[in-house]
Length: 71
Image (cartoon, rainbow, N blue to C red):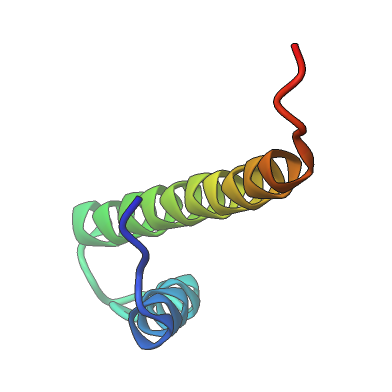
């Protein structure tokens, strides 16, 4: 599994925060604001999936270290 570097992950999380602040502003066309909102939702979903996968991989690695080979 390829890991995101901490700096890149922080950059993406900061982007989510920026998108939550409505960077286009209320004067932007509705379709542009809707697209930015969809992008934010997609990033939040991808980050949540990434966190779940990282947690699952860590749990699996821990279980493997305790495995004795017995079935």
